[in-house]
Length: 141
Image (cartoon, rainbow, N blue to C red):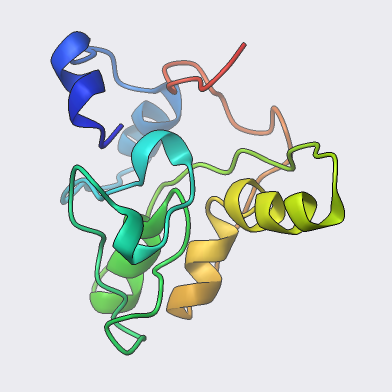
């Protein structure tokens, strides 16, 4: 979860998400893990506290690599030999004001789509329940 307090309090899961297991069965080769911001809370580069923000290879060293799945978007843009990356997309959050709604739309509605757009790659958010979420860390219930 890229949050030091969380990783110190809770043990590492020993379970592989069903979606990742399916990719492996289909022949995918996992070459690494990428960063996401704390609890998928869309942070700007200067707001990353516990870990450094991924570098946006298409930016000017100050451009945000996106929101929660920032590492997925940045890795695809930076390494031409990567074909895909796995991320999350939490969907649209309800809000009380138009200003809050526009901020939440950037923060929550584009967890894979915003990093894709910021880094110049394609991002796909599957329809709800189109892919298994078994083994994926849930932010809320």
